[in-house]
Image 1 (cartoon, rainbow, N blue to C red):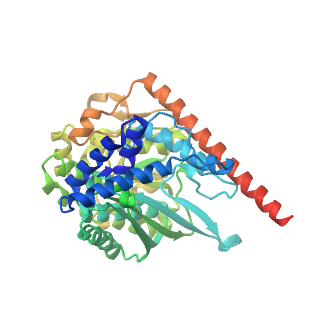
Image 2 (image 1 turned 90 degrees about the vertical axis):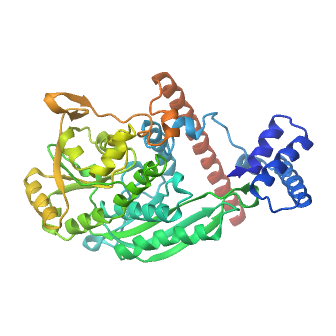
Image 3 (image 1 turned 120 degrees about the vertical axis):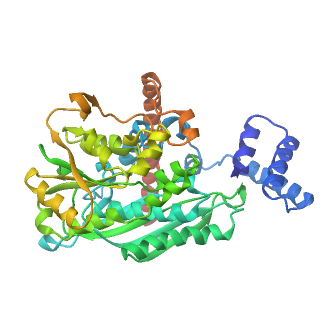
Length: 461
């Protein structure tokens, strides 16, 4: 995938002559679109440069200048680890959720950092919750659209279920590179509809666009799936209480494990990810209102792994946890665990597609029995306590703090080069730059809102 517009802008910033920029664009066209004749390639390259130059003209109107200008923080998404489901990503999302706040407060707003969001509809005792979730497809599964569509849809459904909601609608958004074969679109949709059929939830809307329009060439895809669910009671993270038990079901992973398998030459391991055991487990629990009374919260072991999930879930509660490594390890599919161990990938830092249940101790036995009746392997892996910190208990009474790293476990060769950790000084510097970007965006939002309100009032007058 090549961003021709980005390259042209970058070379103009570096004061490259027009002829050299056009030659660079022509070379890229020749690689990705070899069927085009030289004359058309030359015309396209000149047009791109011309269009980019025109877009660089500075507006004279103050509000438009403000709209189109952006205060760069000089910190890249990759440096900060955004999307890498570690501490860097968590920090970025803290500020995103602040920016997403408004005067119209949701029951589960972005600031809650929960698995999904929720609003209340209906008056008094007749109120119900509408639960919503947006899930992005795994970025490394672009060449494998079916599995990308399958796992992003299943992940979206998971996050509705763990909040106590019954999914009622699936929405699809896919963006494709200009050179994608049309089959990628249908293969992705087949993966989405496969899960939709298995979980009996209809697809109700969608969007299909090209990545960058005519200005980006290549055949990658990206996108996501959104979902809507309904429930009478929310199983929210904020309701977790002291001394609750932590239960976990068996897991074999989803998109992350599929990616690990593909890019470590073990594609057959993907077969273990093709199931809806998580959905089956949550549906069994939701069918038992008597047991839900003893459940504080549910979640899934997702990107960032158990390290990241427990950190996020317990951070705002002021609680800590003791987790027993032997129990957790026994719940990971043995072939998936062999894949992770064989690639030196920390299984505690990747998505496992396992269900976490935080419940009152007196309900633990009943929930374990329910899952056993539904042929779902589940165990108590730990308990919450008043002491800060999350500790992993190893063999021989040894325990270590189970903190998330700056990035999730490195599960592909390229990720291992980039690494999982960043020194504290760099983290502090990046945190300050994230904060700067947030304040700049927030100030801009307020300026535009004020301008629109003033303009509206002026028109009324």
